[in-house]
Amino acid sequence: MQIISLKQKLQTIGFLMLMVFAFVPVKTEAAYSEDIKSFASTLKINNDGTVNVLEKIVYEFGTNQRHGIFRDITLSSKDAPTISISNVAVTDSNGMAYPFTQSEDSALHLKIGDPNNTISGEKEYDISYTVSNVIRGFSNYDEFYWNATGNAWTVPISYSSAEVQLPSNWLLDPAVLPKIQNSCYPGTLNMQKAACTITSSDDGGTYVFSSGPTDPGQGLTIDTSFPKRLVTNLATGTPVDPSKKTTTQKILGILIPIGTGLFVIIFAIFFVLSNRKVIIPKELKGQPIAPWYDAPEEVNAADIAYLLNRSFDKKEFGLIFIDLAVKGYLKIKYIPKQSVFSSEDYAFLKLKEDDGLEPAYKRLFDYLFTGVDTVLLSDIKSDNRAVASVYSKIGDDLRSKLINKDYLKASALNLKNTSKFGGGGVLVFALAFAFRPLLIISVPLICLIFIIAYYRNLNNVTPSGIELFKKILGFKDFLTLTESDRLRLLNAPSLKPEMFEKFLPYAMAFGIEKEWAKKFESLAITPSWYEDSRYGYGAPINTLILANFIGNLNSGVASASTYSSGRNGAGYSGGGSGGGGGGSW
Image (cartoon, rainbow, N blue to C red; front, side, top):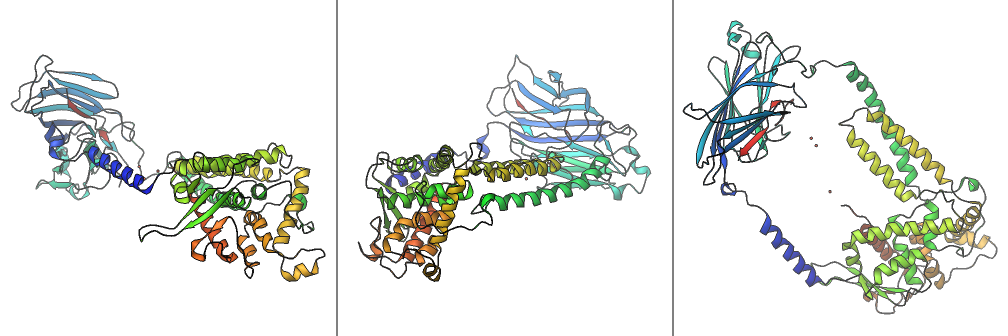
């Protein structure tokens, strides 16, 4: 693994920052060579439910040579009825007709201008048309929900406005005016709250919605609701009245809370199962276990860690570092802070080649010392993508070894990957609830099936594995014996300094390294594999200090082995009928 110096890191960071700032666009008026000075719509609602639309678009081409503009108007929207457009005409500010072509699919496409002539500077385009099937009817009101400018313009719009004129017969009912409700939504698609101005005429028959500058991809949507009977023909295919619930909605209203409750319960069960530290085979539950006074010869500390939980947790990753050190393959050196701006660190120094190492240990050793003899923990942490891959493959190595030695059944799940499936899969399905409510019922069932499969695979230990488990559990009992327990047992060995180092990786596998260190706190331990200048080179070190170091090491390598590659009112910008966008050609 290549080691990068602090100077090289700072140079790289500086270069990357320079490149970022060099290519970040600065938002200024000059950033666009074209823009729309004004987009003013007049929207006259007729008694028959149609709407006469006039769009006055003042387009600034600048010095660019163009033929004209194109305007797209959406006909079919996901949250509005499908509209139809007729009587299309395009003129300039003096009423002179522009040549244009039109085509239609899910939108009306207008291409305005003469392909044989080019223009530049400021031009006004007055686009008029009639919209049908656009007024939506609800139980207590009717609504005109209209995307006035569209959110797909390729140029910014300096000023947008939409003037809505109610049907002429509104004056016949003096109770109408207080019941008229207006909203507007400028900004990016799906935006619900942004600055918008609404004014009305003295008689209350006309309302003007306006907003300031908008960028490409932004627009102005307006929403006017008024009492029924002002229009005679309402749109067909309108959304269901939100004040009334359909049978499906009522059913979902019952099922969703039930499904959510099941999901929470099942996920809690999964969480408890997946975080069990020791999973004892059912054949040994309630059976007496005799103490075992030495580490089982058949397996190493990492194997035991895998067997105990049928997976290799990242919190146990550090025990392979310690086991390699205890076995004489590397030395660990503490590096104090070099300045107030730096942090303490650890160096791993290669002492000998990897001859005879088992696959899981060799994988880590090769990662650390390919091409180098010294590696810093800080460098490992900064290389978290590669470390995560190594950590994952180590778990696979351990599982394969235990299966090949007939301690685990070949059908055994790798519960590390299974946990990722359970957590990641549940998250994906949970996010889908907002879009597919029925999944709220299917997810708990999927989780339940997974947990059943998970639980069945916990009992995947072979008869040979059962015998090995007896030794492992007996060895753990030995490591946790109190002094009074030791005196009562025949042939129980006394604790010696060399035992501390020999069994330390195994204590880490059991998660009892601090308890193990406390048994030796009164003894002088001088580990050859650990060097700490704070206590003098070669000086004895208190075992509790070593336990604290191990905790720091575990946290460091655990963090290195974790890698992460990173629409959440009734209306919103871009909603309703109309919309689309445009640009020049």
